[in-house]
Image (cartoon, rainbow, N blue to C red; front, side, top):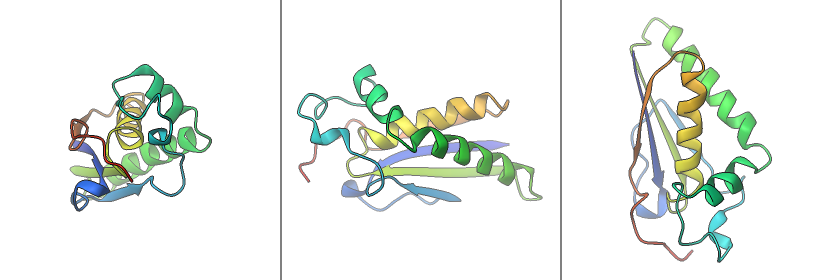
Amino acid sequence: MTVTITSFGYLHGDPPAAHLTLDLRHHFRDPHVSPALRHMTARDSEVRQAVLGTPGIPALVEAVSDAVVAYLNGPGGQAVNVAVGCAGGRHRAAVVAEAVRTALADEDVTAAVMHRDLERPVVDH
């Protein structure tokens, strides 16, 4: 079984190919709007707290974890690719990708996480 989770920013290009693609842009507040968080990334605890404290995010993380397990239990479940996107890929997408990995680990599923755009410069949007 191979699970790969890729975080990305829509402002940096097309989403990667995936079985499940999450678009966090319009439903969850963007830490980018806070001047204190704008230049931070998902590696900073303040950003992680802001994203994981957003209403709906914990339930979404659990739902994605459940969906990945369902895919893995299907007859073609050898590999599952998940793409998690936000505007720039530095905040919401990267935090949620890591949270999904943690939720999957609780289900004894190992997942690799790649952050396509985490190191890119801040995009003004």
